[in-house]
Length: 372
Image (cartoon, rainbow, N blue to C red; front, side):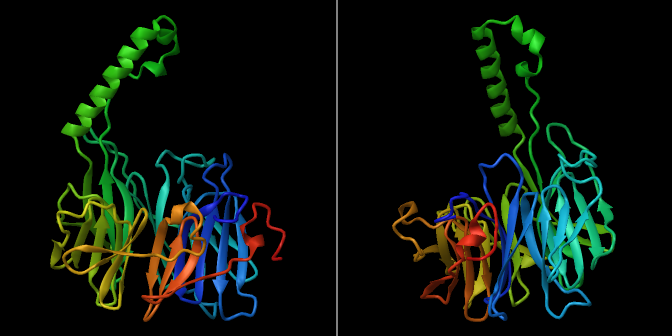
């Protein structure tokens, strides 16, 4: 982040109110996995706290635990570690068999998303991984599937949202799985080939991969999960979804590539509202003051029901990064949006003013020695 010698950036975030939020920072250049989980609670005179974990954090939420007076943050790593940040302590749990580098990894792959509803928790991941637990209990496996139809890899559970009836809505992706010459995987064969032969085979591999992607485009699906049953919800398989959220009116929004905006619910289906001229990759959205506010890679938009209209973000360090915002995520409350930026930090936005939090410098050091 800016003014941070560690060169870290925000990688996950969650908020309960404009005065209570948690985010994780890590360095994308570091070879060793390490994240700092930073929390802010404006109910205390010294509102900041930090916990360090030896993993990359991919998702943060808040949960209600029976013995706690207020919601507490909980974080998921890509290896299936779950860190529940109880005041004065941290509870660590590992979902058995998850991850890629973990000692107990069973080949299912990374975990991606944490969903919470009260003290109930769901975790989504590669190869249709779906896990569940209540409070700090044991993890239960609800779904696993490594099957790969012809030309494709396994289906992955990516984004999701909880539903009022206790179920969840899950976005699934399935990517093409080309089979080429793989010349670099056979050292003996490689040693007997000339440079020209290697380059020719590599070109053939690239061409075959392009042809395969053209004939096997990525596929998106939407599932409703409840009571151990999956029900597929119709959406075009060609859409690419990056975010799912539910607004205060109970409507569910799907945001994604090529300006994708869909709205609806599992019972009645989803309608596409996108304007064909909008091509931005939308990755986070909120319903704020009767409008949809969405983020893309380098800015924010209002959606007026027809077109995306740019919002000028007033950065806290406008002389750096060519005055370019890099939005990570948004969280809306009655009269304030909490805005998280990969590089610039956290601020409150009321529709006009941008009020940035002054994050104490010690919190953003690689080696945390306390607040200065």
